[in-house]
Length: 291
Ligand code: SF4
Image (cartoon, rainbow, N blue to C red):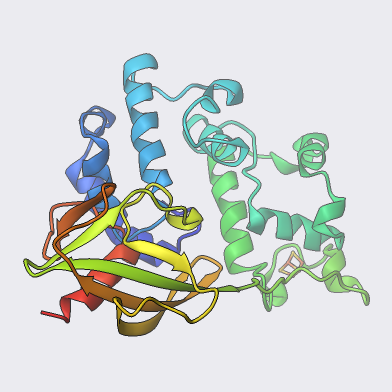
């Protein structure tokens, strides 16, 4: 849940999940639509699909136990080196480090060396004796992430409070490396065309080639290449929608219609039961103002 998402956003979802499904077995019994509905609004829906596939595999193949080696753990859907190492540390107290952006920055600053010039796996491997000095390896994995998020922060690190400030090369150096990168925002312009019925329905299709929402039900979306739009379509609204590093400038059009293309299906604008990603929900809200 925390991939690309802030803790404060995740907390209510996490609580809802763990209150509803208290064991791996109970979670393994639900279907994809049910998990997507619970995930609704959190975004990056691939995570929900991977979570469900992983839980089913753990219950059915691994007797509800997490494997205790990286090679096996990485067979779980959506689990790569980072999550695999985090799980090995958290669950099995294995002496390992989950190398995320925070951890990379801490090492990079401490050595005052650009991240791109550090082989982190080799560095951790060759310093195991110095890094894992207690048996509290699971605490150490978490502490290092938190240290990067709270003390050695991207902007304005709290060096005066830092336990490493006596030996940190970044702090001592007159030639400090640059570690703070501003995220590049890509602006994209889209026209969205909604077939609407008098019964308060909107037509959606999965046949969309929009990368960031591939495989979800959407109205017709076209990149705004010029301003010429067929007169049959009525302009409803211009609005902005941000997704990750994309800033979308959207012109929303609609047309009342009884007929829709083959690959489309009608959805009620009031539907509360179906899983609907928040991007599509915003469109629902705008189109609802027509009624
Ligand atoms: S002294 Fe400052 S820069 Fe160095 S590790 Fe600590 S917080 Fe980071």
